[in-house]
Structures are given as structure tokens and as C-alpha cells.
Amino acid sequence: MLVHEGARPDTTAYTADCADGTTVSGPVIEIAEDIAPAVDLVMTGHSHQAWVCSIDDPAGQPRLVTQAMSSGRIITEHNLQYDPRTKDVVRASAHATNHLVTRDVAPDPRLQRHVDRYAALVQPIANRVIGTLTAPADRTPAPGFGDSPLGNLIADGQLADPTVVGTFGEPVIAFMNPGGIRADLDAGEVTYGEAFAVQPFSNYLVSLTLTGDQIYTLLAQQVTGANSPASGGYTKILQVSEGFTYTLGATGAIEGSVTLNGTPIDRSASYRIVTNNFLADGGDGFPVFSSGTDRYFGGVDIDAFAEHLATTSPVTPPASGRIVLG
Image 1: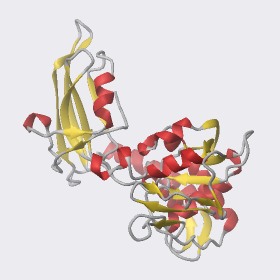
Image 2 (image 1 turned 30 degrees about the vertical axis):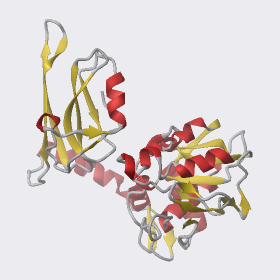
Image 3 (image 1 turned 120 degrees about the horizontal axis):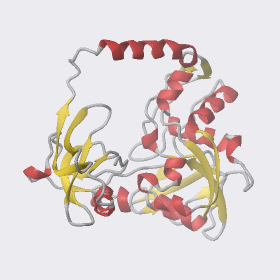
């Protein structure tokens, strides 16, 4: 089974192996303990660290659970024996090793031909200019933890996307996870390929309704729970659309500081928001999103971003400052 959620080892060694004394902590531990015993191997990700461990299944039997870093830095070699007589994997045979990718191996010529073919076919799309920036737009947050010019630009594009309006009303706030922003943009012309490098996941945009109280909870979940450094996580500051501002304290937004177009958020009122489907399902340690009501699926996030650049160019990246550190 492939599972996006992962865990973090108590070491940074890429050869981390629980058999050698490494311990891991994270959401996938509980998940693995609940996956049916019929599954003989669980491969995980998300936390971008490598490890190989054995975690008992619900029947109390050891089962191999592995993770292989990110961005192609590690390959996990899995070996399992299959018994054609029983038509099942021999669980006891399973073992795995993480190997560092040295990038000094000659490309397979047959595979390289396929890569070259499709790289050439996609060039007219990738090289199409979709907008212009008057200044660089980068992912670097304001000092400490805050918003970034590129994060603000993406959130503004999501809020402006007409595909998420639907039958439940127009969203008034957009939230974007910083981990979903994978590249910076230089000043000048922006091609579709450059925009795609920024948002390569092709997530759907989802509008939903949250109460003001849930919005306060959401802002607190950036620095608490699964995203608390004290619990082994790391702070994740959501990027927000124009008009939404607040002051962030140690445990969340400072009471009364959360405003929409200058008006304080009312904890008992309802607000239509938009985000990507990864966050909408509670990803990145934001479970309150999954409590949102009246969900409406729109288009793909990269399309919204590309359209926003096209319709507002030349674009001056929005300055940081929507999030103030208290």
C-alpha cells in the first residue's frame, strides 16, 4: 500500500533503520497499525526523511513500513518473496534498504528516448507566455514566519477563480499551503512551464464554508497539534488572500486581530473560503478544513494561477504583511 502520510526518525541518516535502534514518530504509525493484515508492505512519504521500520499490523504481526526521502534523493530497494502455491507474499521474507542516489549512472537509452520525445512535444505549451511580473515573486516569508509575495499572489488567484463560486456563494478568503509552492518566479515574462513549476500537483480547488470560530482554530493549527515543533512537527503558515489579515501569536491568531477587509471576523458567523483539495481534506495537519460544509469543487489550481497572471498582467507581486507576528 502507498500512503502519503509519513513519519520522522530520530536521526537524519538516510540509512535510518529501526533494526539498528532508530525510532520514528508521526501519523503513519497509527495508520499502519490499523491497515488490514492482508497488506504486506506499506510505503510512505510526506515528511521527506528516509527510514525502514517494522510496525505491527492489527493482528500483532510485524510488517515492513518504509520511506525514501523526497525529490529523488533516495531509492528504497524492497525485496519480497511471492509463493505461487499460496498466491501470497511471504511476509517474513520482506526486507528493504535505502540507497543514496548518486546521479552518476548513465541513463537507460530506451527510457531516455521516451523522455526526450515528450520533452519536445510539451515545449509549445511550456514556453507559452501567460503573463508578466514587474518584480520577482518568491516564496520567502516575511521575517520569522509570515506571508510571501508568491504565496499572496497564488492565494489572490484562487480567490478570483470563477470555477469555485458554485451554488453556495462566492468565496471571500483563500488559503494556500506553503509546501505546495515549489519554485520562485523571476521578473519579466512568465511562461506556463515556469508557472507549472510553482504549482506542479494539479490539485482541484474547493470552496467550503467555515465558521469564524473554525477559522480561529485553523490559524491555531498552523503552530499547534501536528504542526507544533514541540510534538515533532514544524510550523506551516498558510498564505492568504488580499483583505484577510491577522496577528499570529505563539498558539495561533491573537483574539480580535483576525479581520476581513478591515472588519473583525465574527466567531459565530459563516464564511465561504477556497483552498486546494489536499488542504480541504485535512492535509498538512489542518483537520478543521475537513469539517467545512457545502463543498464545491472547481477547476485545477495551476489553471487558476495561470488565468490570474494572464488577466492581471503586468502584475506587481503583492507585498508581505497580511500576516503580522505578535
